[in-house]
Image (tube, rainbow, N blue to C red):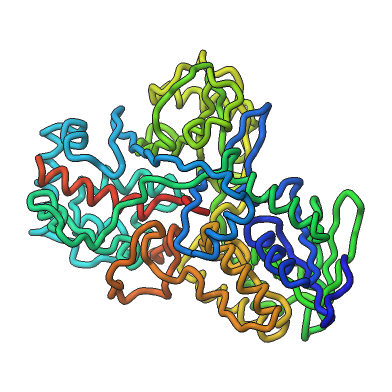
Length: 524
C-alpha cells in the first residue's frame, strides 16, 4: 500500500464495485492514498459486464440516469462521451400477448378484450362497495384501490417472482409508500378528461448506456486509478477485520497469494454487513452478531442465450407476468447497444431468474438451467429452441438486500455499535449498508465517505431516503404513517404471520404502480 498522505492518512477500501471505486477516485483527487480490495476477478459488482465468447451482457440491466449532478459528472469524466443515447422500450408479457409499458389504451383494451375489461370494472366496483376492512398486506391494499382482478393481473405474479414472498405477507405500508398518487378514480378522470397538472410522472423514455455495457465504466475507472498509483487488487476476499475496540487497525485477505495484511488509518466497506460483522476480530458482541446473521438477501441468476436470428423483439427488456414459466424478466442486449453482440446476424437474450442461494434453481447444473431457459423462451414464443446455439449462466449472490419486518432495527443496532466502537470504519453501497441503493446512490454514499475522511461531515445514511420513484420528477410528499422511510426498489417488509377508456386508464395506473412495486433494478 502507498505511504500515507501529508497528514498521515491512508485508506483501505473493501469492494471494487461502483461504491468502492468511486471512493478511491474521490480520494485520488485529493492525494489521499487508497487501495481497493476486490474479492472477485472482475470489477463492477452487479454493475459488471460479462464477456462470453465476445457476447457482452449486463447483470440485471443498468440504465445510466441520475438526478444527482455529481454522479452524472463523474460518469462523464470517466467515459468522456462514450455513451449511447438509447430509447427505452419495455413491455409486459401476459396471456401470450404483449402490452406496452407504460400501457397504451388501445393496446391494453384490444389485448385483454371486452370481457376481461368488464371483469376488471366489476371487480373494482365490488371493491368500492365491499372493501377489505383492514389493510394489513399488499393484496388487501391494492385490491381496495384497483380491484382484485387488476391486482391479479399486474401485481401478484411478478411481485412474488421477484421477491419470493407471498403478497399476503407484504406490508400494506410499503405499498402505500411505493404507489403514491395512483388510484383507479384518478386514472379514469385522466383517461376521460386528460391530466392538466400531472402529479405522477411517467418513466424516462431515453437513457444513456456505455457502448460495451456498464462494466466499461468501472473497468475504465480501474485503469485510471492504477495509472494514478491507486491499486485495485483482485481476488482479495477480506477474511479478518482486526480492531482494538476503538478503531480498525488492519484487514487480512486470503487469496492466490495466501494471507495478506493491509493497514490504514481509515476503512471503507461495501461488503455485505453480515460478512463484515462475522469477519471482525475480536468478535462483535453477541447481540450484534445475531442482528447481522438475521439479515437476508435475494439472489439472482441470468441465463444468456445466443440466438441464431438477427432480430427477436424491439424491447430493452420484457416483464413476464406469467406463472407458467419461472423467468421473471428478459433482456435483449442488442437493443441496449449493438456492440454487445459481435455478430449482427445473431441476438443475445438474458433470461433473469430471482432465486435464493442454494435453492433448487440456484443449485441446478448450468446445462439444465440452459435447457430450461430454452424451453421457456420457446414456450413464450420469442424463439425456437432449435435456434439457440449456445448459452451460459452467471450467478450473483446477495444481489438484493431483503427488508424483513425487523431489518431496520437490526441494521440500526449494527450501525450504532460500529459508529461507537469503530469510528474509522464507514459502510457504503448497497450490501454495505443493507439498503437498496441504486448505482448512483451507492456512488453518493462513497463520495460522502471519502469526504468525511477529508474532514467533512456527511450522513451517508441520508442518501436515498425518499420514497419517490427514482426516475420521476418530484411529487408531493407522501403522508403515510409507516415504518422508517425505505429506498426505491426495496424488497417490502413482511407481515408477521398470525393464527373501454375507463378500462385503459385503470390499467395504465395499475401497470405504473406494479412496476414501481416490482422492478428490482434499473439504474443500479
